[in-house]
Amino acid sequence: MKLNYYSETDSLYIDLSEAVSAESREVSEGITLDYDEVGNLVGIDIDNASRKLNLREITMTNIPAGVLKATA
Image (cartoon, rainbow, N blue to C red; front, side):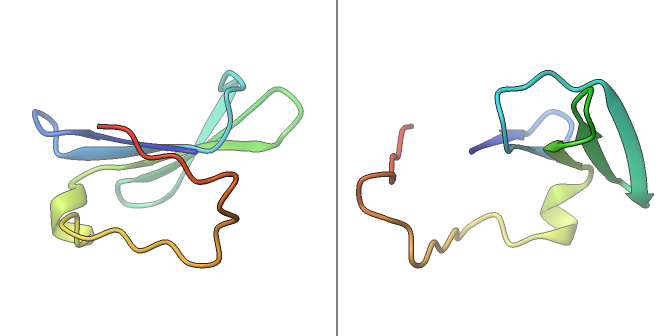
């Protein structure tokens, strides 16, 4: 999973999979879910992210140590 913040548009994209998005559905104002060709959720796009989320803190719990990876 990857979190990608774009300051120029104040949007946050959460990549849940490396699969290519084939369909997008806006589920509420400024929240779009992306699905692959077989209907699996592959990403979440959040517009005006700084108004909807606390972007200053990310908390992860119960993540297996062998899986945890942080990059800047």
